[in-house]
Length: 248
Ligand SMILES: NC(=O)c1ccc[n+]([C@@H]2O[C@H](COP(=O)([O-])OP(=O)(O)OC[C@H]3O[C@@H](n4cnc5c(N)ncnc54)[C@H](OP(=O)(O)O)[C@@H]3O)[C@@H](O)[C@H]2O)c1
Image (cartoon, rainbow, N blue to C red; front, side, top):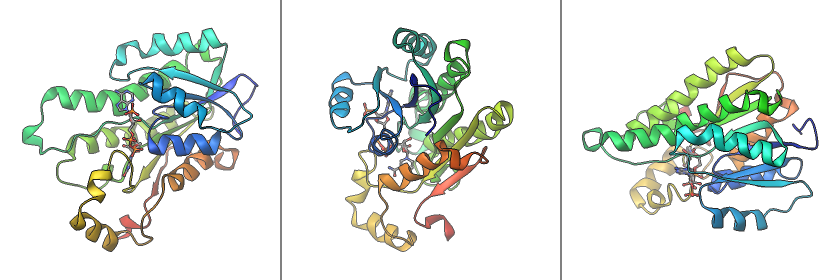
């Protein structure tokens, strides 16, 4: 799909997330993939669940440590003699709290994992070590970047940062690299399962989501499209995948 050479890969951050894994399942049938995660056991067991004739490499790193990303990622590329042609940023952390209860350390962690880590990864992939192979970046944003919601201000702001980053990066990196974001609506995953346990949430959800509940694979399909040559004239865009929730 995207790979220019047999040693070029697509890197998916937080491949261990529900949405990340759905993305990996879609793209691994036609691409080599670097699975990123912070837990080595989770990563190894994930690798065993992927059926592919293509190559898989693991990158284990805690993205809270933004300062060390460049060194660790460069090491991965050099030691494995690989390059990255596509990058999907899926990692995120969420803390639902009213702003008055927020501590600066929570805000920093949210921005480090959700936004600054991705900026550091993109920056590293533009260095000589990646041999100008990068050609597509897809950042997982969220519907919350566009709509207000109680207790979500810092998470929403980090996703808004992603969407702004996408616009400027698209301008700065064209025509070589396309940069887009995908804004999923509410999906039942490890991050949100507790919400779906509430009858009130489900009632409001059913009224809002015109097409009912979605699946992680609905987001993966959009990501896979954006990575592909079929999207070769699309850059700097925020693509919403939300079952029509944002229509009203
Ligand atoms: N579910 C939704 O309704 C929804 C809606 C809009 C957008 N999204 C976005 O979709 C993406 C995937 O979320 P998900 O719903 O699939 O939830 P999830 O399974 O909870 O995914 C979050 C992922 O981020 C990883 N992560 C958190 N802190 C990290 C750190 N310090 N270093 C490295 N990785 C870290 C987690 O790693 P571990 O596996 O080690 O815990 C996990 O894999 C996120 O960007 C989220 O904001 C989700």
